[in-house]
Image 1 (cartoon, rainbow, N blue to C red):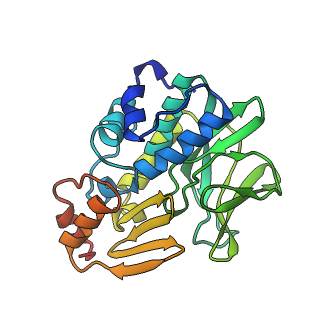
Image 2 (tube, rainbow, N blue to C red):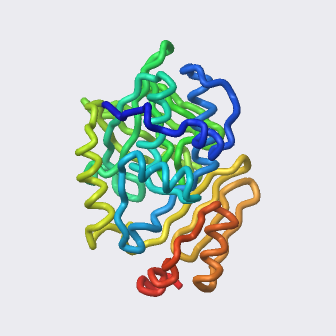
Length: 271
């Protein structure tokens, strides 16, 4: 996929994710970037919730995620990460997945999620810096039936005919995240899925507040007004009003809250 890597502000991106390490296109560099990115740039869906467009061109991605103090959802995170990897010299392409999280294994969902395929000397790896509360914090080797540890959860890949399924060990059990194929996706494929998820009245992103960010000690997750920390000293609390929600978005997730969010929270009876 042509992602015009020459136009990205790599120095600004590296400052945003607080990374000062090597930049050679190696597995070690990929692992380091894959950890730094989601810990610095939160997953969030404030624009769809506020009924604002989600733009996927590189200029918009940089303005929002790098310079604007914002996060985003899968297409934004993984497209930005794809630009970064491309300019560093990685062989990277985009894939699409059908989300299974919170659904029965046999449920057929649309291809509404993006992940990345990277070809390295050690083999084929998968990267995904935009899957909400269970965003990977390390790339995974494309290999079936092997438990792969990351700085947070343990993952495994299973073959299902021509498709693959990604599972995560969460809550003491293996739980499916999504099913995907290895066919490369083009920008127009993501534009169609992004338009549906960000504008269709049936999309949960239009009615539910979601934010997530991993930390060295665990993960923070915000679902509507419920703030949860998943870690050794887990905790959960209900935020009482829009002011508390906006404060948590800033203090916990590092999100520069856009003006007008409180109106969306009241419209959806979130606060």
